[in-house]
Amino acid sequence: MGTTLTVAYLVWPDLFVMHVGDSRCYLCSGGRLRQLTTDHTIAQRLSDEGAMDAALTAQSPFAHVLWNSISNVAKSELKPQVLHARLKPADVLMLCTDGLVRHVDDARILRTIGGTGTAQLKARSLVDMARAGGGADNITVVVSQRPPARDA
Image (tube, rainbow, N blue to C red):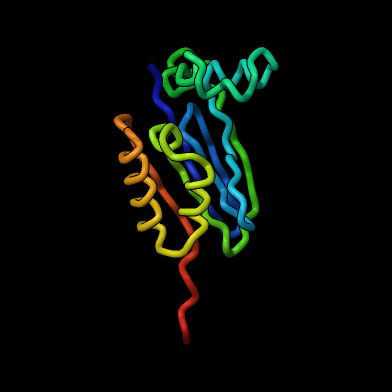
């Protein structure tokens, strides 16, 4: 068992992400959803190395076995993923635990975070969808978007 961490730091328009484990960072931009982070699971590593069909990764018995986690700090083996992206005003950022993506597919996530409403409403809707889909695991969702411009 290991602890995951996904951190986003924003200095407009630059986004910096540090990631360890299988929680995720997504970017909704231009009507598309893109997973910015890579899961640090045995199944994902096997897929990346061509030893497992990518379509089978989510169903693998190794889909939630972490090879990289905060627990590795004590062994000096932590290998965080660090990335940078430039954001546009209409972009929406989402951080989430695997409890969301086990029960809500990318199309539903895109419709929700790419739609109208506040960041808080979008996050709550996604958590509710995951629970309705059978989510018993930790379901954490953080959505960040620029607030609408105020009339002067």
